[in-house]
Length: 192
Image (cartoon, rainbow, N blue to C red; front, side, top):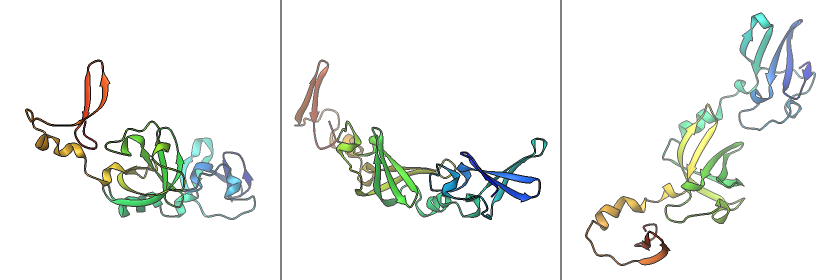
């Protein structure tokens, strides 16, 4: 390593031949804010050549490619529909981020928290540090995105609605709200 900038580290392969390891190519799982978190001037590193722009005398390299991509292993170990356990690390207005493996977080979108309860904020349902079990809804190793859901751990109450409440059946329920266009009646938890 011969030079470190805010955006990466320059590595000299031989006299007159340098390559750039961009900060985004330094770790699969850590959010590296500055290359100095990973390398120092004078370090000897192994890296993979990612691209060469011969006409511009530029070479781009990656450190993370020396190690197996943990996102690919995650996809194999936890296919869509499987269950995974993790810890809530961060809560936003649109969902909660759950760390399932060191440096790998998945998002539970607010719409995937519950079949029946409507939340104004995920903070009303989850808290930071809480251990949760969730269903894997999708993994995109290339984009490093993991989609999780809590409600998918239980059956969707609407799946049985056509059988339980066919047209013409007389039912009893609890009035949950009034609107100018009608009345909302809860027949069972999660079914209005």
